[in-house]
Image 1 (cartoon, rainbow, N blue to C red):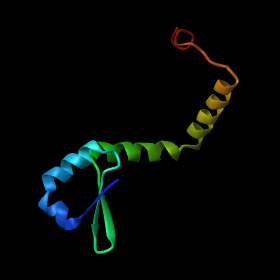
Image 2: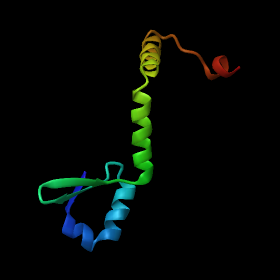
Image 3: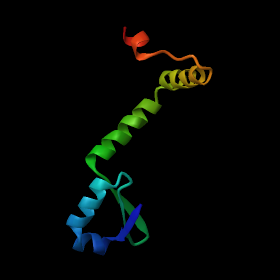
Amino acid sequence: MYQITSDYAQNNFDEILDRASQDPEGVAIVQANKSFVLISQEELEALIETVELLKDPTLLEDIQRARQEHSRGEILTADQVFG
């Protein structure tokens, strides 16, 4: 993750916004032993969606079952699934 000081962020704000929009990890801005992360709105929404999905125990069980079936070679083609 790209890490900068708050002074650098203030003086180079447009550059920092560009960097944060391109880097999925965002930009860490450090000020007085505190660290803040600037990420794009799209990245934040994706993280929130991932957290919500991971809260669903049924989904996690389905994923684990699918992985086990795949490792045993129990797979279906797209035509079998979608007709």
